Length: 515
Image (cartoon, rainbow, N blue to C red):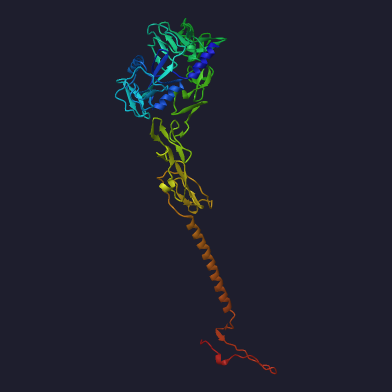
């Protein structure tokens, strides 16, 4: 049960030794981290590991910080001081520690305080306290952690290499060794781990530092044991491996994982989760990207442990996802970054708690100094960049095309008939474009007017044709005949009731065309 608790504690801490520098004294551990960040981001990283930015209340702690800064790179580093009041007469000049109090027996200001809303950094060059805007991104920061259940040093000399769970390694920890520190005695080649103020000898729980084994750790009932690769045997320290004698066929086989003996011959094999390579000796991992092989199985890599995201990070199977704080959204060009976001036309501005006039607003918003709010800019009025219709949205705008037009990728509305589309009309296709894109313009009224004119003209032509046909029809009813190129004009002859007369041609009106 004790080793299970140790494994869970180590897993929850989720950190690995890296380039950071640190030391522990008086129940505290201090770590100089060389990651560029502003004050709030630095404090958040410290809090994620159950700590906070360093408080330097005594000259002894100032000496500890000075020694740490001298071991690292030059630059400026945040400490846990922030301006909160107007009193400049006390030792901290109106500042308070990040823990919320102003108790201090030590100060080291570079110059007189400006009593302005800002935060404090120390320089690697002179270790002086310097005021600067909290939004500045500087070279790093110093975290402070409680060092509970720490162990005494394994040795009084520097023949022990310590790898701490706070993210730093050292051969010079001579006072308080943090819990879950993995220690190696260089003289005896033994490994130990600090847990609950006691040192445990390797091998321990295989889930923590692979049990301290040089090659690999396996569970043997209720205990753990180290094993060696083929051709090697376990040393007397129980964790290291040394090469076997020459009479063993696997001694010089060069197998990366395991070696199977058959009389004087051998064959290399691989552990579960691996495949033998073409050279017959090395092994290729079968795990998918985002996984590592551990004790013959694929185990998901916690990418979030390396802090790849600007805000929060959510580990997933084989990958991870960056999550932004409230009021922010992922940047379009970089998934690791976040930018301010307001879903409404009016949102509260993000202001420095110590300076109401140092405020930020999302893109597309203006800061209203009267009520400290961010107000949306109506691009439909200020820029008038839409081809036809425009709808203002929080931080941006959308363009729409009239009926019969289609919106192209570049934001231009194009007549469907001219575009070659088989679809006769397309209703109101929205788009969001930056104010620099200026489309061509045409109105729906113009299109409707053209269509009405065409219809009226067709009707007029139909009426005109009808009138012409009627005139021609009347002309054909005249008593005019044309026979053999001669024209005769007949007149009606009235006959008496008592006589019968024949109609004869009127010789006086007789015309004959000369031949």
